[in-house]
Structure formats: C-alpha cells, structure tokens
Image 1 (spheres, rainbow, N blue to C red):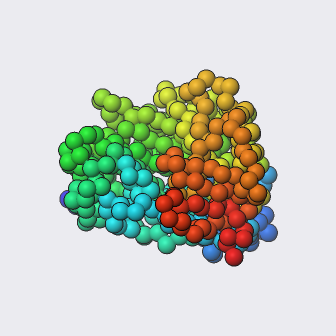
Image 2: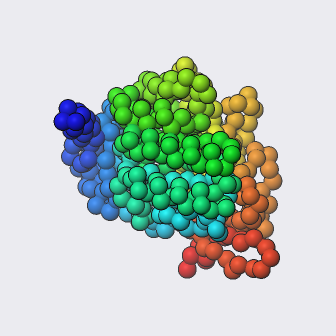
Image 3: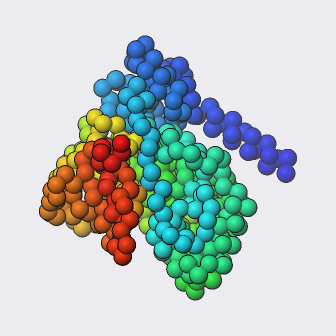
Length: 398
C-alpha cells in the first residue's frame, strides 16, 4: 500500500512539472510573448484559470505571436468580456432517470455524466469555464446514487448510452472508472440490452503521456470497455505523434469489440474556418494505425466563442459543403448546439430567413429559432406544442 501511495505521489509530482500554470513559466518556453501580451494574459487569467501542458506548448504551439492557436489555448483581454452565460445544460428532459448535479439528460435514451471539473489544459472558448460546475472528481457515492435512481426509475429502461464528459474523463482516477463499469454492466442487465459508453476527451491532444503512462487509468478503461471515443481536435498541428500513440493505446485495450474512434471540432474564424485546413487535419489523423471517423463539425456556441471567431450558419454550411464531396466516411455532420439539443444541417439544405431567424429542429424534432446575435432565451411555453427556443437573439437577452 505504501509503495502504491509513493507511486501515486511521484506521478502527481511529474504531472505538476509537465503542466504550466503561470504566464511567467510559459514565457520561458515561448519567449516571443511580449510584455504587453503577458499583461493581457495575466488579466484574462485573473478571471478564468489558466494552465496548459508543456507537451502542447512544445509540440503544437509556435513561438510566434501570429500563431492562431495561441487564441485557443492562451488567455487574452477580450476573453474578460465574455458574458459566460452559456446555458447548454439548463434545459433538460422532464422526468429524467436520475436527479443529480453530475447527471445531464436531454434525451430519453442518453445521459451525459460530468466525471470531473478538471482538464489538463483549458480551452479559452470552453462554454463551461464560467459555470458553477461541481468541483473535483466523481466519487463512488455519486455513481451509486445516480445508478440506483436510474435502475429504480421507469425511465431508466429507456437508456441506451452513457456519455462521459467533464472536465475530461481521462483525468479521472482509474478506480472510479472501474466502479462505473460495474454499474453500467448492472444497468445493462436491468434494461435487458447493452448500454454503451462513449468517452468525450481532449486529453490525448493536450497531454498524451497521461494516457500512455497511467496504468490505473488504462485498467479502468479496460474494464469500462467504451464503445467509442470522441476526440476534440481543432487544428492539423494538434495531430501529433503522441496523439497517434494514445489512440493506439486506447484501441488496443480491447481484445474484442474495439472502440470506434471519432473526432469532433468547433469552427473558429481565422483558425479552422476553411475546408482545406480541416481536410489536412483529417489526412493527418488518417496517417496513423487507428481509423478515425470525422463526427461533428460544430457551429460556434453563442457564448464562450469570442466575437471575432464567430461564424454565421451560412458560413459554417459552406465549410461543410467544401467537405461533402469526400468519401462518405470522411464527411462530418454539421451540428448547431442549442440548450434543447443538437440541430443538424446538411450541406445543401436551404437556410430560410424567417424574419431574423432560421427555423431549425433538434434530432428529436423540437423547433428552435436560431438568429445571428448573442445569447439566447426561452420563449413562452405554449400548450400542446414543443418548447420553441430563440437562440442567438440580443433582444431575448435583455
């Protein structure tokens, strides 16, 4: 036991050395950060925390103020004025299978579990950065409380997928993943069908060494047997040798039913709003030994995304149109995030202006009014019809 504790202490100390948590430490690796830019970064970090893995700085970023990835990974002054009012989790399914702060359920067949508030790096556009998220890692008691409710609820029998999110679930101690695996297996027996597990992660991009070296984590994932991993990759330079090695490691954990590896990525003006950039990223992902399926091309969130990075729906659709002539396995789905759920737009779908908004529908058929302003607000609930959301309306915010 003492040997194991000492091993954990050394691993923790190694992680601390490999995570940069101050602007001054970062400038030693990126000396081209000017005094003015450093002052802006400190100002941004005073409102929103800052940390970044040394691996990402050395292998992905360039020591060049013109590097567009600086805007995604390093704090800045403009970030201070982000309202932080994103309400992605605010509207959930009525009559969920479980009531718990970590249990997010928008669909009767799917639950998203927030495993932790921690990520090795902090995306500056993350819609959760100003949310009252539960601090720390999930516990055995949390897992039991949620799954006990789900098995006791009639709605629990409708569940088909458990999505692990966070923070990043690949930063969670392996013992909690093993306990979760036991409860998912029990739930599958309860519903009489396999309940699959999907892991959303950016950890292999930020800090692949955690995946490659963390034996308890790998043991937990081996027992959990995820059906799929959805990797959050934004730019071609993020596809490193470490990412390829981590994907191989995760895939090789399974003797049978190897997990499906997929990627999704938000769109940002000036960074990846070009189908040629995204095609290069897909080519780099395809150069390794693991097959990676492009999954979601994500239209920018109304909040969190800085104004200069935002795109209109038509601009996002044009990017998809540039990708649509590739082989079918290389074409992602263009998804528009809303509090009521994801809306999907095709490459040639006609976007009709209905007086300042486009009428979209979630995959469950809920109508959503989507405009090009900022923020969103719930409209009046009318009897006998689904709730209609206005997404992107300045007027709705005031």
